[in-house]
Image 1 (cartoon, helix red, strand yellow):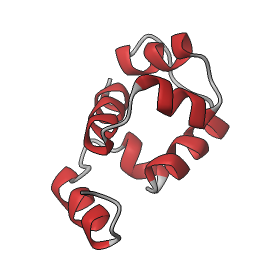
Image 2: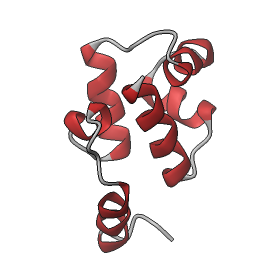
Image 3: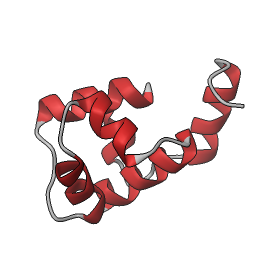
Image 4: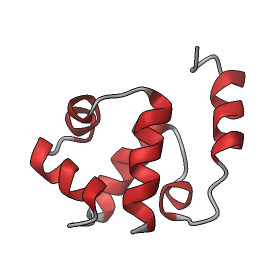
Amino acid sequence: MIFSRNLKRLRYFKKATVHEVSTAVGVSLETYAAWESGEKEPWLDDLCRLAKFFKLPIDYIVDDDFDYEEYLRQLKARGMLD
């Protein structure tokens, strides 16, 4: 469930829609929604595409100790957040 919680938070922080993320990763809306709800977990290649979309290492997405405030600071420093 850590993954699904982190995934939802990352999407909110990035101000992206479910459609935007699912399209970027190349999965259906249903599959992406199942990831966020904790019903399913992605394959490794899907995790790689998620990491690329969020511009984060995979361990940030699946780690319980992920620091969201630090993530926001990094995005702001890179000019990727308003």
